[in-house]
Image (cartoon, rainbow, N blue to C red):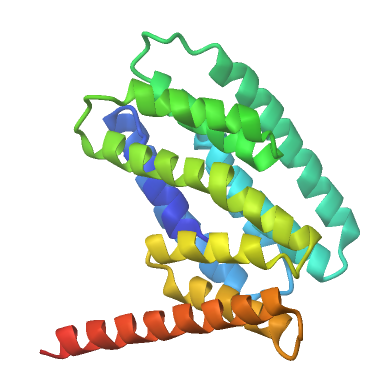
Length: 245
């Protein structure tokens, strides 16, 4: 369960010292609850308790804990808990959306509201709304140099890249696993991001798709993918030599 990341995010977005103190107390209590749950992994009650604690201070961040609980419930066949968690998440999203949409643009908390709205829209699969909110957030943060603004801007830019570039390619690949052109495009995106493991995987899948084919285009694609793999391997080897020096 990503408790540390969630609590760190909450601390960064705290509006005042009272909120920070409350979150720090929550962190201490939450660690105890989390540890107790880890000792009894078959029971999700401790995780639900932790999610409920986070929801009191930051409902949007609590969605990720509830989602984690729901995913585990589905995998274990606990459909009743999965339905309950899904309903809870829907309630959180509805309540938070209504509240966040009413935050005035001139309010100091407007950027945080946009960030949370974008998070909810992405979670709901409302891609256009999420893209709009993240884009608006980047505009609002223009000129700000504080740590929270920098963190939110980096996150927003990363989410826009995912929503506008990576996700559509993943959807095309999911619809047609042999769509090598989409795999080449997403592999290039991963290389630009220096996520070489994912790039390597995509090129490997292209080779698997094409191997043994007599189609000239498939043969060309296989050679291209092999060449890219060799380039990644050389790049990684060069990096290892640099760090070894």
